[in-house]
Image (cartoon, rainbow, N blue to C red; front, side):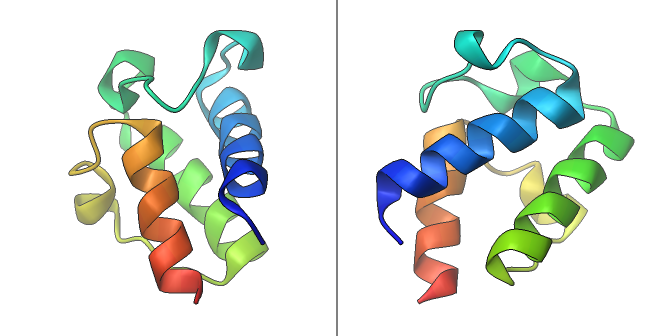
Length: 79
């Protein structure tokens, strides 16, 4: 798995969880700008856990400012 693949997957997960256009999401996208509802974060966390076997507690999820920071976390934890 490389960073570009993880980024592509997380963009897809974010678009689905936040009901946003994937074309408008990139690694610099601020996750709080997408939405801060717990349900959205849980949905995205569940997708990440299912795909990469990486658990992200909802409280921890809120600490990631950008999608790129979340990608970096997933990369580190999946190794």
